Every structure is written in structure tokens, then in C-alpha cells.
Amino acid sequence: MNIVYLNGQFIPEEEAKISVFDRGFLFGDSVYEVIPYYRGVGFRLEEHIERLGHSLRAVRIKNECNWHAIMDQLVEQNGGGNLSVYLQVTRGSAGKRSHAYDNSLEPTVFACCSPIKDIWQAGADEITPLRAIVTEDLRWHRCDIKSTCLLPNILVLQQAKDEGVEEALFSRDDKLTEGSACNLFLVKRGVLFTPKRSSEILGGITRELILELADEHAIQYQEIDIDYERMLAADEVWVSSSTRGIIPVVEVDGHPIGDGNKGPVWQKMFELFTEFQRKLMTGQ
Picture (cartoon, rainbow, N blue to C red):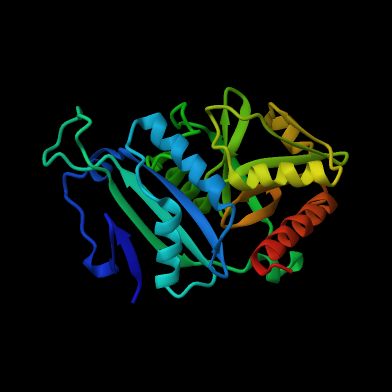
């Protein structure tokens, strides 16, 4: 039996119910986070909570919960181990459908768990590279807010699957921004490049860790605008996310990236990233 958290209670998932007038349901008036737990320990938990706080402030939803305690207890009640916590906070329900709201609303807070793979034990050889397409970025201009309004992301990922590949990359004003649910990196002559932080990309927790590891291990990197031609000419392309880690992209729009295989800089960063995880989660 899976246990979920809803508005102060830990209950079986089949007992969880919200109002049909909840603004998250009616308008997508809500934000979320997804936090990996390895062996019962939150991965970069403080950074995830900080980003949640940014999203809540940006949309002016109350931020009054002990997120750390909620998620830790939820993971414990679901047996610990390797779990992904999905946390969603909506503006709440006014008991009617109305675009307008007032500050008396109490947020709806929901969280659930699902199993995830132990990335560091899999090893680089077990990581399956991706093929991707590039599609126009039709999302709103506040992608730094981790909103649940994900219809554009859903549609482009389905488009990718319809075309027989695994990922979609967004392009806005001739600049690559990010993937359907991941940040973007490329490598050229040993130098790592990633799109600059802005309101048009989500500041990924794993993205920031990759840049920290690059600093620590003398891997040069630049945050720059990346156009389509630069990406196709890259030696390597990667995407990253908290639950999937770092995954190489070996083909874009039918064009091979580099020699069409996992690249040496990805191999190095994958080792650094998974070693960081292993030490953090095992204490060894």
C-alpha cells in the first residue's frame, strides 16, 4: 500500500481526495518539485527546497510548511530506499471557479513517492543514449517557475515518440533552451557549454551540480547562447535531470552527434556525478 501526504495527513493513496474547485485542477495554478531519495536520503534536498521557495514566491502562494520533515517522513512511511518524491502545492480551493482569488486561500499540499533506479550502481555502460528532435518552444516566458502547466512539454515529448525518438529539445528565437524535462549541455573540443540561466529555462539542480563538478575537476565550461548549427557541430550533447542523471544524446533530427557514441567528456562527468552520489548516500 502506497502512502501519500495530503494537507497534513499521511494516508493510503486511494483515500486522497481534493475538491473539484481546487485551482491546481481548474487552472494549473500550482507548482511542484521532484526530489530523488537514495537509501532514504534526499539528494540535494536543500537546493530543491530553495527552488520550490522561488516558485512559490513568484506565483504568490503561501510557503509555510516544513518541507524537509514532510518528505523525509513520507519516504520513511513508504519503506525508505531509492524513491522519487513528487511534491505539488496549489493555491487551494475557493469552492467555486473564478480566475480571481484572495489571500485567504489555504494551499493544497500533496506528495507521493515512486521507485527510481540506483544510478551509480548501474555504471556508464548501462546508460542508454538518447535520440532527439528540436521543436519550437511554445511555453510561457517564466520557465524558471516550476509550474504544473506542462501541456507544451507533454505535446513535444509525444511528438518525439511519434517520430521514433526519446527526447525533444526546445528552441526559442533561434536559441536552444532545454529539453522536455531536462537541461541541455554540449561539448566542443573538450569544453562544456550550456544555455545561460534566464527566465526561459528551469535552473536545474543537477545542472548546477554538473557545473560545480566541472569547476572542481578543471573541466572548462561556458554558459552561452546555443544555436542549432552549434549543437549539430558539437562533439557531444547531453541532457540532465535529478531523477535521470546525465544522459548522452547521440542523434538530433536524424543527424549523428560527433561519432554517434557516448563521448569521453560525458564518461568523465558521469563518473564524477555518480561518485558524488555514492559518497553522499553511503558515507564512504
